[in-house]
Image (cartoon, rainbow, N blue to C red; front, side, top):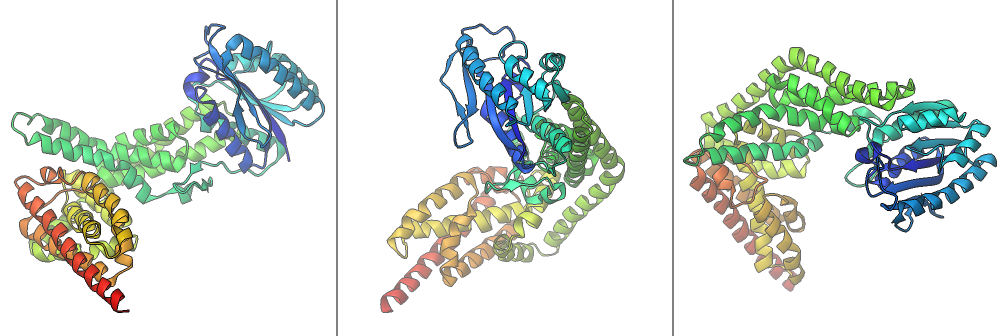
Length: 522
């Protein structure tokens, strides 16, 4: 296994681009190196409390090094002048290991070739091991010492991830190692691979974009207050920004390139605004894919990191935006309008039937995993068009308030005492934040009667939503939801929510008593 050493400092320009958090900066290199089967054999990194441009000698700093178990450890905080002396001791140790053939490559970041790191770099030059790194001045000085620099770049426009991918890409190519960039970790903590197509996750994109839609709904509600009608212009601005938000989120998640991905998504989204939510989503996905492949190609061709980032973010976003503007937007606009028209037609045909059917199906949809893939995107499409949603109202009444009713029943009249403490947090979160409907799952899955109660309560509340012609949204505090309903329907929305909570509460209490009596007889 090839072993590399990481040496350098938090630097001047580097400090503002990841160097201010040495653990995160070094950790990204560890992650990428592991993907290529490269071991980190030595770390000598000075982390200062501020940028090293004109830094005083007494500024606080630490030396980050490798502990016995292979993890990063931070030394004692001392004045920079003392830390520099400690680093020289480490550098002498590294020089010995390089001379002994124990280190096969170097990663340099804002190092000091003529001072602190002189010993290790002279040893590296003599051993002719490959060196990669960032920091224009320091890399030039390293080359002057005779180091075998196979990739050098400035730090401007780079991120921890793009620098690490660049380093390991070049070293892997030099050593003919198989390497696939790691773009981060999933919600469960599992490492995600570099397969860009497997990172297309509609649920993740929609959920991350949701705050933008809630902000839009809040502004719309405020614009209805006398004297605040001028906020309608703000609302219209936010509506136009929705495709950009979705595109930026999609490109960031799919490219795995952090800020570079965001930039590519913003460029693509701005050019695809005429396609609405769907247009922004598709353009953002395309921007993320293109940014990823452009970055990887640049790193393989040893293009400097700054240039690679500009190419990935700028060219990737521009290419995706042009496709979005001239190809995707017209079709996406037609599709989005068609979905909204279909919902409107169903409500016009029979609003009570539409509401009851939506209420009946929404629990099976969320349990079956269909909600985030199908219903949430439609909710967001409706909100983009008008600021509120028919299915959003069903979500609040049929899911959130029904879950609140079930959990409240188990707080006040539990089947067994332990249920009360388990149910209370779920009730509070549902009422306070308009989410966490999963709090009802333990009670629904342990009792067919409670499960049936949820379906009945959701269906009944859906019927009233259709009857009253209510539209709204979930994911907001329950007390504020009626104020975000369509004009003149706030009271009716509150009634629908109350009906859902009361029906779920009463039926769950009855179910618990029946189940309790069955248990006593057994």
